[in-house]
Amino acid sequence: DGGITQSPKYLFRKEGQNVTLSCEQNLNHDAMYWYRQDPGQGLRLIYYSQIVNDFQKGDIAEGYSVSREKKESFPLTVTSAQKNPTAFYLCASTSYTRDQPQHFGDGTRLSIL
Amino acid sequence: GDSVTQMEGPVTLSEEAFLTINCTYTATGYPSLFWYVQYPGEGLQLLLKATKADDKGSNKGFEATYRKETTSFHLEKGSVQVSDSAVYFCALSATSGGSYIPTFGRGTSLIVHP
Image (tube, rainbow over all chains, first blue to last red; front, side, top):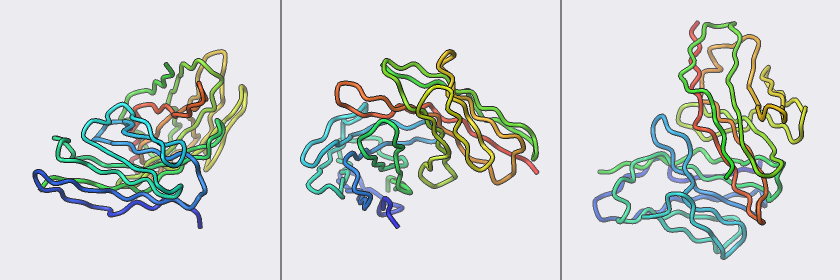
């Protein structure tokens, strides 16, 4: 079955450490997205990519970085510059048409040690 | 820019009650409209969608009608179950300048008691 796989499900970060969250899709979608969700809050866009080797900042990109070397993969790195990284991170993808929904992974919960 | 406004939650209902979650939008283009559902600890799943005015999306007893004249897409269900307890997100998508960035509401938490 096609879908989006995020890993790991739970991740712990030490002070001063960079961590990378994985997102892989086998839906042949062009566009991929990273969102941050805090308790009781909606989704905030971190980065998005419409095509391989290109990506754009979203509303809260500071302290995060991404790459898009393959169509299937869009990893997110939470750097030590992100001072409040504890949150639920969601990856999504979609074909690039107005009437198609986003498909979401099951998320990664990141906590500080 | 585009925006989506949902009623604030939590919405608390007894089993078999009627559900309405209000959603209104503003968009510069002609958007498609979506409702997503999120269960605890999971990602969002598409619940239903509508792509043009007067379309009705439906799934699992939930319905929503695309009302262009009132810029609304309210979610309804005639008889809720405990298993419907989740967070519901209204969203729109419209292409603008070649970009495709869906816009989400803040989500409405639904709690259904037995």
